[in-house]
Length: 187
Image 1 (cartoon, rainbow, N blue to C red):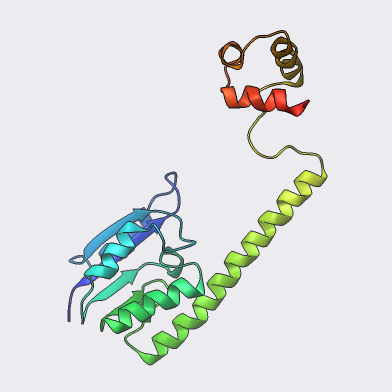
Image 2: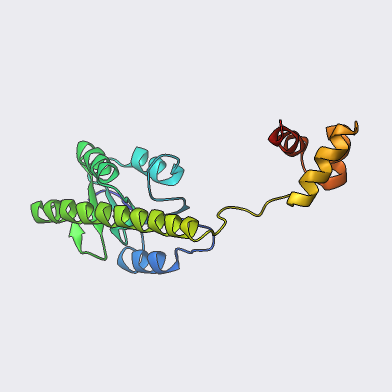
């Protein structure tokens, strides 16, 4: 048996890997433990995972707590499994008790991957529906406007009177680009 590498991931800084790390260390206390805070929607930019994948050699095993800490779409999951297979390594998912060193484990993992991707797509659809409903109800989405309509009118008036955009940007506490955009709105 080769080395065992554990991998824990969360998407945002306000989340933590405590549950994952506890389960991984309980199962494999002597493993090489790695953690990462990156979105799971793609493997691009996941430096820790990519480094682990480069380090893995024949007989090694990559262990994660749950499937979604590794991949959220079927393509990434398939790519990871193919890379591990080509290196003669295996993947184990503790929560679902899946080990790709067995035929049953490989088949079950592929089914789970399809469901994980389906769940991600449903979440995206719900998010888009929520945004559309908010827009239909007249709710403003995005950050708060940096200038009120009255301030915009004042800026236009002062600009027409000859005040330059740099001075206006300092007076209103916004960028010059913001001033140029306000002036352009009436052009």
